[in-house]
Length: 201
Length: 218
Image (tube, rainbow over all chains, first blue to last red):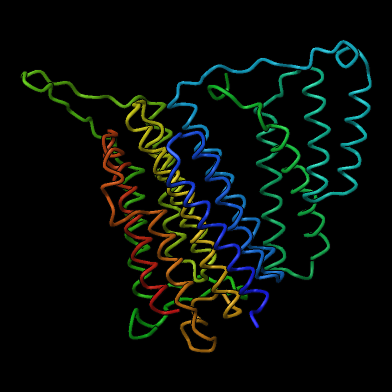
């Protein structure tokens, strides 16, 4: 009888082989970029197959490194193809631009995100902020948001040091980590798609 | 372990996540540190090109903006290499190796030349595809032995890692660093700016030397 792990690993490796076969036959650069994104999925599946707490801790950095490489490659693709035009499409709906509804909706989402805290809360609060920026057509203050993200990231890392070296203050560290990651995820997500062209223009 | 690289000089353990120095990894670490210092201090070369069939020649200048970005990427690459040298668990090693791959692409991608950018893109595709065997290998190690710590795997307290995991790890590092396969990187070396481009080669060489050690002891 084949164990579940071996079966899962076999299927994941088969998927990987299929993707690599597709990658070796594809010559269009954009399609290859998309196929390479597909390569990431079996690799996450192989990590997830371990099925312990450790695997959960390993997936996140793997995913982050993959996304970072993907973003870097997309940027290089834009550069080498000379695609420099910034899309200026905004929501041109009078009800959204003039009314107070987007503000209220965003406020609800941000408040709910703060209550949830952590990664999930950050994601939901970021949704509210992205919606507000899109609806109001406002330019985000990039420098301010980046600074906030940097400081909250440092708070998050600091909390981990408290866990390691002074575990008796774990409650403080949990609160600091939850707060730090909330702000960081919220800010980083709300910057998505907003940072084009030259830095600080 | 002891025959291969000497007894650990220093170990800092947080459960499965640990940092250790042996004479072998310490010397690799020092090499990475030294070269990072050289990158911080030195100024980029000015590549001279000769027009074929004439006696005309011109020197390429690296603009300040490009220099800053490439120097930053080289320093990041040096730090990632140092991390890969000292990390004592398989997963952190693979993460740092993946980071070396990204920063290697970054070092050359800032050059305003279509050939270089094209090569950087193709190399980036290989590096990204290399994360599958890399993380897959590390995951199979932890699934089959229950630990990621290289010291425990080498000490014989845990069962040895399967051959598949070792093969995948090596394949992954070949994808990220491409240390012995310079032909694929040849176009990237048209990028001017000597100390930064050499960082690509040095980091790939170092991660390759380290993976040989890891695969032999686990």
